[in-house]
Image (cartoon, rainbow, N blue to C red; front, top):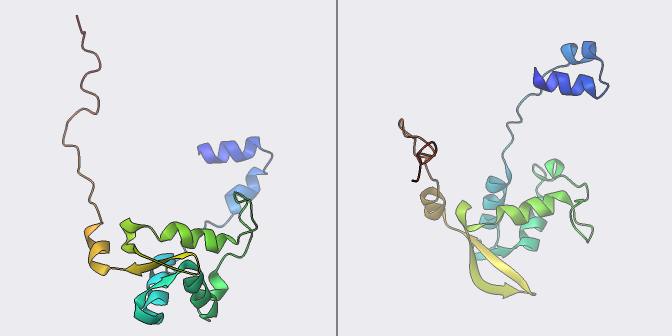
Length: 139
């Protein structure tokens, strides 16, 4: 309801809002499975971000889904899919820096065991206050 109020206050017709179709969740795979598939296609299962990007662009299934708009938060004109690729290649997702470089670029690999181990389960608070010190006097 709050979203409706905000959109109406910005000049959107309320009749259009009520007849508007709700967004459907996109069930396509995210970048991680695409990158893993690309790394498996590369020799030794390792490659630079540029090599991974070349494999993704050559894949007829993945290429149409890449966002080719230019990223607005970068100085150099970089496609949005390339920025997302760089942000996905982080250790907590199972990717690792091999310590080598090719043509001045870092070589990445993928470790499935590290990906499983890095999934953290959030511990539930069982009746404990988030800030127990509030409301108590210190004198």
